[in-house]
Length: 403
Image (cartoon, rainbow, N blue to C red; front, side, top):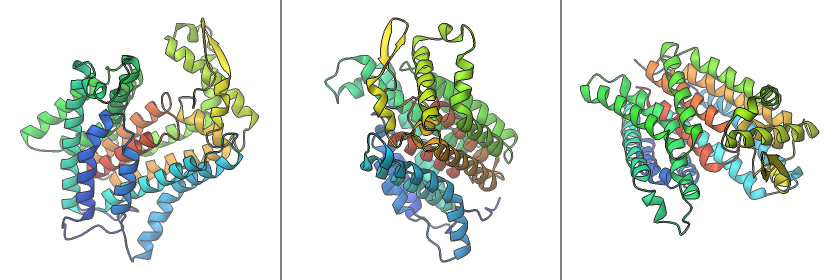
C-alpha cells in the first residue's frame, strides 16, 4: 500500500534511500535496552539528540503548516506547563526547560521516524526489534539473577530500591512492545509469526516481575487496545483518545467518587490505599487553585505534610501524586488539563489519519496509547523526563510499524 501524505510526512524520501532518520533511529534503539534496564534516565537526552538529528525539513509550506498544526497542541501544553513555574511555590526554571525541550524533541523524534522512506523505516524496525529482544533478555537476567546488572552500579543493598530500575525498564518494554508486534504480525514468514508470539509472552511474563503491578495492568490493557486497534484501525485511535482525554478532564473528581464507595479502599492493597489517600489530598488542593494550578513542581510544597494510612504516616504528596491527570490538574489547573486533553485527542486523530490504512501499525498505536495511559495515570509523574521520552518512543515505534 502506498503511503498517503500526512502531517508528519514532511520529507518522505520517495527514492527509499537510507538517510539520517534510519541511521539515527538505529543508534537510538541500539542504546535503548541498556538504558532502560538501568532505569531509563538516559532516554530523554538520547531522544533529544536523535529528535534534532532526524527533524524532517521541507520547502513545501503546506506540509510545514500541517506539521505545525499537528504539533501545536503538544507544544502548547508543554509551554503552559513550563510557564507555570513562575507562580510555583517551588520555582525550578531548569525543570521548565526540560519539560518544554522534552516535548519539542519528542515531537521531532516521532515526526522524523514517521517521515523516513521505506528503507529508513525498515532499518528502524530492525533496530526496534533488536532492542526489544535485548531488553527482554536483560530483564530476564535481572529477574532471575538477583538484579545482578543493577547491583554492579550501586552500593545500596535494599532490593526494594534496586529493583525499581529494571521495573522501570519493563514499563518501557510494556509500551514499546506493541510497535514490535505490529512490525512482525503482518509478516508472512514462519520466523515472524513465531517471533511476535514469543515476544508477547515474554513481555507479559516480565510485566509480573519486580513488584510493579502497574506494569501487568498496562500490559493487559495494552493487549486489549492492540486487539481493538486491529479490529477498527481508523476508529479505535480516536475512541481511545477520547476516553483518555475525558479521564484527564474528570480524574480529580472521578477518583474521589470511586474511592468513596463504601469499603472499597479497605479492601485494596496497602500501596493502593496510599495512592487513594494521596489522590484525595491532591483533589482537595486542586480545588484551591482550580484554573491555573499551583505551578510546575508545586506538588513538592506538600511533601512536608503527612497522611495516615492504616498505622502508617506517609507524605501527603511524595514529589508527585503518582497520576498524570492528577499531577497536571494540581500544577497547571484547568488550563493545563484542557491542553493535555487536546494533545491526547490530537494524538488519536494523527494516529487514525496516518496509520488507519495500516492495520498492524494502527493496532500498535492503540496498544501503546492504552498502555502509556494506564501506567501514567497510576504510577509516574507528569514531568518525569524519562517517561515522557518512553511515551514518544512508543509513538515512534508504532510509526515504524507502518509498511
